[in-house]
Image (cartoon, rainbow, N blue to C red; front, side):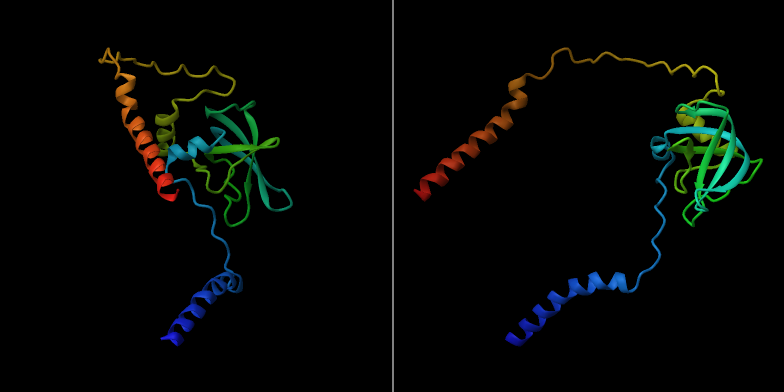
Length: 194
C-alpha cells in the first residue's frame, strides 16, 4: 500500500514538469489570433470603418507589411481626414497580405502612426453587396469623405408606468438581516473561544 502511494505521489509530482517541458520540446507554430465572433464586435473594435478602392500596394515595414494607397469613397465610423489614405496590412501568414489593386474593400482599421492598420482578424474584406448591407444596417448609411455626418436616429422615450418606486427599507431588508445574522455568528464564535 505504501509503495502504491509513493508511486502515485511521484507520478503526480512529475506531471507538471513534463507539461512544462513538453510544449517547448515540441514547439509548433502559434495559431493566428481568432477573428471576432460577430460583425458588431469587429465594428466595436475598429477605430474607423470605411470603404474605398485600393490604388496601389507596395512592400513596406522591412518586408513584414504591405502599404496600400486607398481612395476612400464612404466613411461609416471614425474620423478619416482625407479621401486618399494609407492602409498597412501584415504580410505574414496571419495578415491580409497584399490586397488586389483596383478592387473595392471595406476596411475595419485601427490607427497606426500616419496610416491605418488592417489586421488579419479585423474583418476587412472585399466590399461585397452583402457585407456593405450588413455594415450599413449596423452603422447607418455613412458619409462621403468631407461630407456632413448622417443625422442620428430619433430616440423614442416611454414613461415608466409605476409611479411609486419600491421603498428603500423593503429593498435593503434582506441585506440588513444578513448583517445581523453575521454579527450574531461572530458573537457566538467569540463566546465559544473565550
